Length: 113
Length: 115
Image (cartoon, rainbow over all chains, first blue to last red; front, side, top):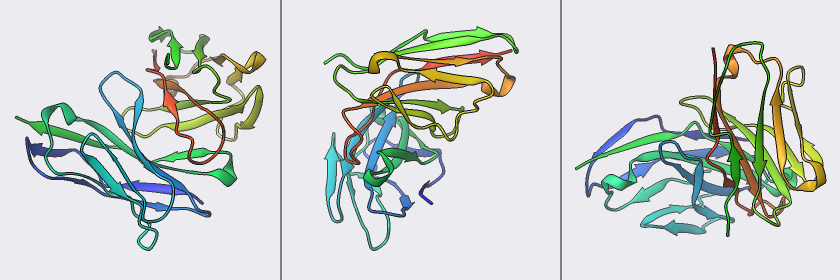
């Protein structure tokens, strides 16, 4: 079956530190991969996506590369800000499955000034 | 463009009572999803509609949960009777279509507390 595994949080960093949040997936087909971010009291917002192997998604300084050989989609940012504090969700969807999304359990990021 | 609208924002009910949530997706979005998000967990799909037809409701507790999407636009999710374990945030999302690279757009959710 399909599933997404994320590193457990919380992750606590100082401002301007380098961020990596690991995400690996299992899929029966050829999925699209996504990172969503959730700020307190809000719904999930799309952060970035990649639809095929070796694609790099990027947005707001965040990047993730679709690695088919390692079934991974790790999220990175070179210099985090306090405003990046949120919960980050990795997700996959498959066209053959009517765009059903599978979400990881989320990783909470705390950035300290 | 206007986002996904949900109401109410918060709801507190006693167990065995009933409750309904409403969702209006982004205009033109054919696919609509209801997710349950328990504190500290990722969203869990309850039901997925394509226009006004059900695509997937395999994880919907059908003895107590029901959902409809009349006319293929807005949707309601109902719980009757509620249990304590139904306390969660109920998220509605929509996507333009059901292709795999079509991202989900989420509303802000309804936080349900069952006492």
